[in-house]
Length: 253
Length: 289
Image (tube, each protein chain N blue to C red):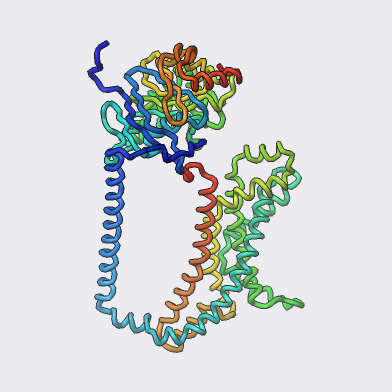
C-alpha cells in the first residue's frame, strides 16, 4: 500500500466542540479519501450532526483544525463562503426554500453564487431532476411534494453546485419507511458516481451497504472505525456492541 | 443534543486554538476601533458643517433658545399629557378593534360571509380614507347633528383615530394569523380544540409574536398622529408649541415638543425589542447554541 500523494479530501485533526459547557466533540480525528464514503453511526447526541456542521463551517470549532483538499478551512482568515461552495450539505428536514419552485430551489446557488446563466443552470437542473425522476415536478413548490421527493430535490440542490464533498445529515430520519428507499437509492447512485461523502445515519442496513468505512461515535469520540462488515457485525469495542444491540432490539438493523 | 457534562476533561487548548482565539480578539478590537473612529469622523463633520454654516447664528437663536425652551416646557408638557391619554385610549381601542376585524376576516365557514365582507370593506374603506377627513367628519359633522349626549370633541377625535388605525392594525394582525403554518391548526384541531380555542391558544399567540414589531411601528405612527386632534380644537403638545411660537416669534417650542415625542416613543420601542428578542432566544435552537 503506497502513501497517498494527494492529501485526503477531508481531514479533521483534534476537533473539539463545546456547547454550553458540554463537550460534544473531543479530540476527533477523521480522514476521508477521494471517492470514499464514510458513514457515522452513534446514538443521538454522540456528535454526528455537530461534526458535519463543523465541516461546513456552520459551527465554529473550539479547537483543532479541518482541512479540505489540504487547505486549512478553519483558519479564521478563510472566507467560509468560498469553502462552502465546494461542499454540499443535505439536512434531515430538507430545508428547501418554500417560496421558490423546485427548479428555482435547484438553480439558486448555481445562478447567484456561481454566476451561471439562467438557461444553463436550468438545463443542468432539469437534467439532474430527470435523473432522480422529478423532472415533471420542476414547476411545483416544495410543500406540494412528498417527503421523499423533497429530500431528493434537496440532494439535487446541493449536487447542482458540483461539490467536492457531500455531507448527508440523517437524510432519511424524517421520512416514512416506504419513502426511505427512493432517497437511499439516490445516495447509492452518488456513490457509484464516485462522490466523496460523509453520511450520518440511523439506517444500519444502509450503512452496511453503502459505506467504505463505518465510524462509531460515542461521547464525541470515534470509538471504533473500519469496514462495515467488521464494525457492524463483529465490533471490537464493548460500547459499539452495546449500541448495536440496542439498535437491533428496536428492529432497525 | 445531550451534552456531556465533564467540561474539565483535562483539556488544554492547542497552540492553534490559542492563535485562533487571539486572532478573533484582535479582529474584535480592530472592528471596535474602526467603528469608533468612523463614528467620530462623521460626528465631527456633521457638527462642523452645521455650526460653520453662514446662517448658523440666526438659526441657533430662533430654534435653540434655552430661555424660550425653559419657559415653554411646562406648558408643552401639559399639552403632552393630553396626547398621552389620547394615545393610551386610541392604542387600546385600535388594537382591540383591529384584532376583532382581523379575526372576522379570517373566519372560514360560508355562514360568516356577511361578517367577512363587512370586515373586508371596513379595512378597504378606512385605509383608503385620509385620516384628516375622518377626523373632520366626526368632530365637526357629528356635533352638527345636535343629538342628545354627543360626546366631547376629544372623544370624537379619539374615535376617528381609533377607527382609522384599527383598519391598518387589522391588516397587520391578519398577516400574522395567516403566517402561522396550517399544520399548527391541524395539530391543534387534532387535539380536539375548537376553532376558537385553536385561535386563542395556538394561532394568535404565534401570530402576535410575529407581528409585534410592525404593530409597534403603527403605534408609534399613531402616537404622532394623535397630534392631529389639535385641528379639531383641543390643545395638545403641538398646538401648545404653535401658540408659544406665535407669542415669542421663536421656533424653539416646536423643537421641545419634537424632543418630547421622541422621548415618549423610546420606552415603547425598547419594550417591544426586548419582548421579541426574548421570544426568539427562547424558541430558536440556533440562537441558543
